[in-house]
Amino acid sequence: MKLLGRDIPARELLARLEERLRTRGLSSSEPVDVPESGVEPRVDPLAFNLQALEEHADATRPLPLHTHRGGAGQLVLVAKWAFRQTCQVFINETLGRQRTFNGHVRDSYAQLSAEVIRLRAEVESLRAAGSTPAPAPPAPAETPSRPPPRKARKKPS
Image (cartoon, rainbow, N blue to C red; front, side, top):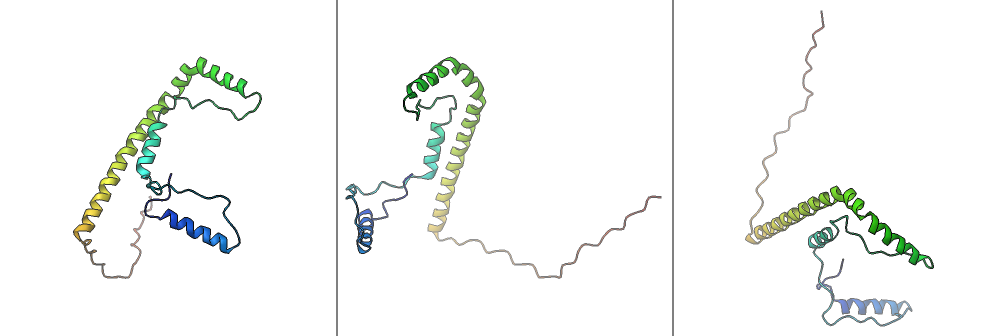
């Protein structure tokens, strides 16, 4: 996720950082190239999360095979591949309900995101129209608070 947007001048920021490093006796180890187009635009969190949910909604779709092992790493990859080939039917059966749930979560997130976008647009239009919020209702007159009277219990006869 990109944290910098076009509203932050990248070249100016880098120049100020370089200057502060030089005043402290430190120099940058290597020059940094900033693209001519500037920093990439901000990522919309709603769209980013929706895209991630879409990408990972199917729990039965396998992740790429990889290993962190050195010498025996190829044997581990072959074993993982063989397991997937022989057990994929069972994996699909086991994760079927999770796949359905993930689809519902993705769809719900999409609906909520659309509602948030609609409400933001409505708030902006109200602000642009110069409308003021409705006045708050007048506060009730303060009265000393007393606990409610207790009801007498009937004794069983």
